Length: 211
Image 1 (cartoon, rainbow, N blue to C red):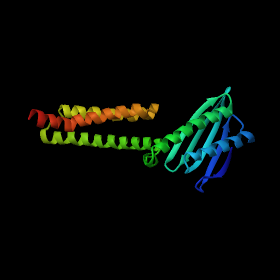
Image 2 (cartoon, one colour; image 1 turned 120 degrees about the horizontal axis):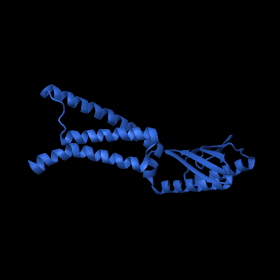
Image 3 (spheres, rainbow, N blue to C red; image 1 turned 180 degrees about the horizontal axis):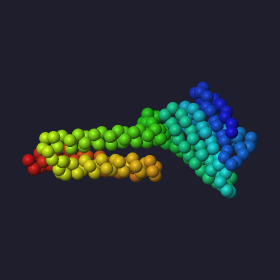
Image 4 (cartoon, rainbow, N blue to C red; image 1 turned 90 degrees about the vertical axis):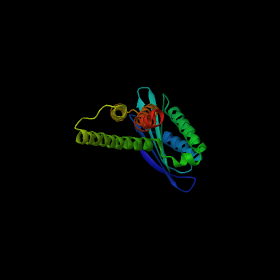
């Protein structure tokens, strides 16, 4: 494993780390990888560091390249029997990702990295589950104090419990199976829709359409 510092285009130091797993990184390969990785700065001038890991798996080599910058954290992977070809393939993926980010303008520079955004989403979901549990528990306790009866499962209460259960299932699947991305976002939108129907939706039907 080795680490080198290269001058970024804006005078900053870019740190490049190259290591092998079950595979020895030769000096020629290291020099080739460093030259190729440096060229990524053409597409994003504020790269801080890059971590390349080459793993030998049978007759194949997997190249994993993770690059960091100001508000940037992108990981790419590629496999090929030839370690250099695997590196070229993963660099092509990273170049496309950086080009797309550059085309997004200030939006792409402002938004947090995907991994950070997903972590924020999970933290917000955890807080939401806690707040909903507290709201449902206090609502049930208040109902018992005022009427002496447990919550009646009206449309509003039923939809709220379904949304709460959906959030719990999403958190559980994220921990057990790594559920994320579009599939998780779609189910999360379903939960928001249930909450919308439970409170503003029921009130709109009762006060406007019916009453």
